[in-house]
Amino acid sequence: MRKLKSALLYTALSLVANTALADTAALEAMRAGDMRKLAFHSEPMPGSDVTFLHEDGSEMTLAAYAGKVVVLNFWATWCAPCRKEMPHLEALQTEMGGDEFEVVTVATGRNPRPGIDAFFDDIGVENLPKHTDERQNLARSLGVLGLPVTLILDPEGNEIARLQGDADWASDDAKAILSAIIAGDAS
Image (cartoon, rainbow, N blue to C red; front, top):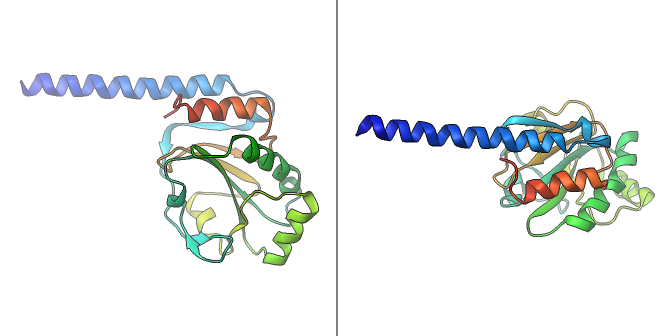
């Protein structure tokens, strides 16, 4: 009986693992345009419980977004590619943001509030958060090197994909991939 239970458990785990790989392969096949730079992980990577500052100055963690697929963007006011990318992230949030999905922007490194406000005003961004990670603790805990970097987190807060550099997150390609993830076609 014990061997039968072990065999059933092993079979179930194998099926789940193969399904996760198939889902990732399907998502990878959807990559086109700027999304070709999006790298999916074969297994979800643990997220982070490191605190960073909410735009109101209070401490928070990524657990605040539990239950949602999150596009987590690390940026800085001095970053030229960030200036190009941020309006695309805003358009994505405007179109898809809600109970199941959210774009979360975190200014990492030394980005004083007046500079962040001026950056958003200059590029006309109004509906993205102005969270900060001044000491880069969150960025470091997630292995972020260089800017911009965008992570896709599953509803459990695990990283399932990463894109180095800027991208058009409002493109049909990006929205199709994210819609598939939200629908549960990725693990």
